[in-house]
Length: 230
Image 1: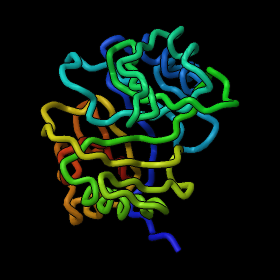
Image 2 (image 1 turned 60 degrees about the horizontal axis):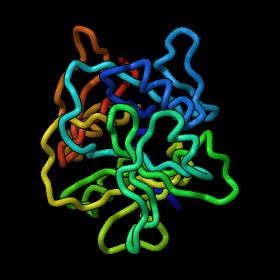
Image 3 (image 1 turned 180 degrees about the vertical axis):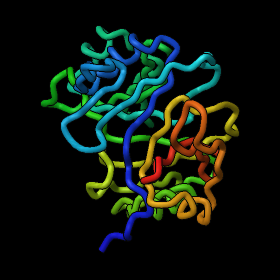
């Protein structure tokens, strides 16, 4: 029996300095379709698979605190799109650390039998100070449960069909959050109070050029919340 969710996943959002270029990369990397009216809005086949690539004025200055994990048959396709390898697998880590054309980190996992392109989004990973507290908080929000074989050094939540990927993972890092995240997600929620009473913070109310609430989770990670009124 899975907990009743407080909010539901709506979309993944990526900040960009070169919006068309980054949208083109991730559309091909993950097999998303550019919207006919807005090619920087990428659509998938299932609910929640949409990705918004948003133009922002600030440049990337620090390591991404939220990144994507991608499954692929081999790296040739990602490299042909403009990705670069930052770190190859070693004795402790069996995946590749990559960078997209704007330098945003992501991880690539080689899966025999898969095509090179498109890759498959298998997880979203969040750097944090307290992974287990973060997993407990987001688990309550999305109605998710811990993975069947929990680990001591990080925490992961199983999608159970409520997210458009397999796992939402939280990993400990020594450095504190130093800048606005360039990867975040949007949620749908019946009332903002359902989030604030659980420890979320409102960073910006609807108004001006936005019709949604900009929020932060207990560790300050930004996300956007849409209510029926917005």
